[in-house]
Image 1: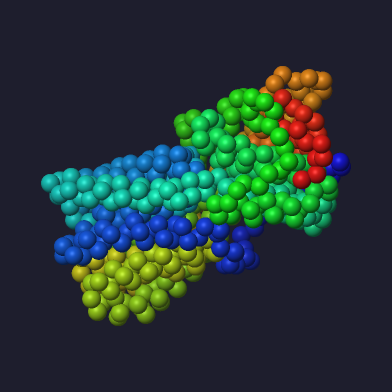
Image 2: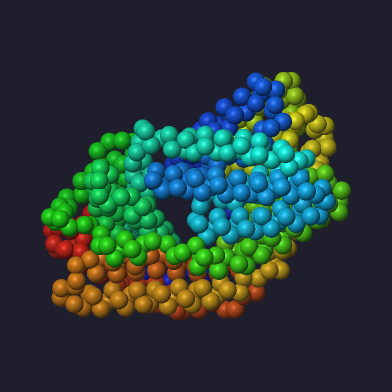
Length: 562
C-alpha cells in the first residue's frame, strides 16, 4: 500500500477582503435540531407569561431558555454536563447584572460591568470549548439585564424564573436521547468518514489535497474526542467500539488515500444516519483487548481550564476593551440602549484578526438587513401580543436554521427578534428602534474592530513554536516505537493518537496565527517540515497496525484497503 508524501499547502497568510465573506455554505447536517430546541425551550415559558399577563418578565425566562442552543454535537453524557454549566454560567452573569442594576443607574458603570462580563464570558467559553453560539448569547442576556430597572427585592424572583427556564432548556436539550441515544457519536463518526473520503478522492496529490487532508485529520480527531467521552464499559461500550473501528478505517484512508475506495467510506457514513445497524468493517476485535489503550484515552483529555485560559488573554482583553469603548461611544451619541453596541462588539471577536474582520462585515450586513425585516414585521406583531410572541418564535427558528449557512443570514432573523423582545413590556415607535439599532450596529462593529487592531496577539507566534515542538516530540516518540519489533501493549496506539492530536493542533494554531497583524514572522518552514514528517510517521503507524493482528488496537485486517 502506498502513501503520498505530504506537500506544503499554500501560504496561510490572510488579507482583509470581502471575497467570500457573504458566501452561503451548505446547511449543517443537524440545522433543524438547534432550531426546534430553541422553539421548544422558549415557547412554553413565553406563552405562560402571556397567559398571566406578565410578558414583561420574558427577558428572565429567555435567559434560561436560550441555553437550549448549546452542545448539540456532544454525546448525551457530555451534553448533560455542558448544558448544566451553561445554565449556571448564564445564572451567574444575570445575577451580577441584576445586582449591579439594582445598585446604580450610572450608564458608564453599567457599560463597564457589561464589558468585563463579556470578557470573562468570552474567555471561559473559548477555554471550555463550549462551541456555538459561544459567549454571544450569555453577553446578550447579561448586558440587557444591566439596563433593566431593578431592585434588590426583585432579584430572587427574577433569578428563579431564569433557573426554572434553564431546567426546562436542559430537559429539551436531553430529550432526543430518548429516541436516538447514540446520535451525536454516530454523526461524528460519519463526518470523519466523509472527510476521509474527500481526501481519498484526491488520491493524496490532486487539487486541494492539503486542505482536504487537514480537514480529514481534524474530523477524525473530533470523532475520537467524541467517542472517548463515552463510557468504555457497560451497555454503550458495544456501540462505542463498533464506531471506533470505523474511525480507524478513516485513519487508514488518510494514511493511504491512493489505496482507498472513497465510495465505501461514504457508504459507511450514510449507513450511520438514522438508527439502523452500525456497518461492519470486517475487523475482528482481539479477545479482551480494548481498541484504544488506556494511555491514549488519558492523552485525549483536555488540559486543565486554567492552562487553557492563559493563551486567551489577548482575546479577552480585546473583548473587554472593544465592548467598553463601543458602549461609551453609543452613550456619547445619546443612544438609549448602549448594550446593543456592546453586544455587537462582543460578537465580532474570533480566533484572529482576519476572522474578526469577516465577522464584522457579516454582522453589519445581517443586522442592517434585519432592521429592514423588522420594518415589515412590526405592523403585524403590533396587532396583538400573541402575534408578537409567535413572530419571535418564528424568527427564533429562522435564526438557528439559517445561521449555519452564514452568520449574516442568521443575523437577519436575530435582529428583528431582538427588537421585538424589547416590546414585550410595551410597544414602541418602530422608527426609533430601527434607528438606534442601525447606529449601534455600526458603532459597535467599527469600534470593536479597531480595538482588535490595537490589541495585538503577540503570543500567537509563541504558540506556533510550542505546537511545532510538541508535534516533533510526538513524531519522535512514534518513530521510536515503530523501530521496536514488539512495542508494549497500547504504547503505539497511544503514541499514534498523540501524534494525530499534535498535528491537528499545529495546523489550527498556524492558521490562527497567520490571521493576526503586527506579529513576528511565523516559522513557516518549520511548520511545513513538521507536518510532512509527522504525517509520514502517522501513516506508517496506521499501516503497521492495520496490516496485521495487533494487541494495541485489537483489530485484525488482512487487506488494509477500506
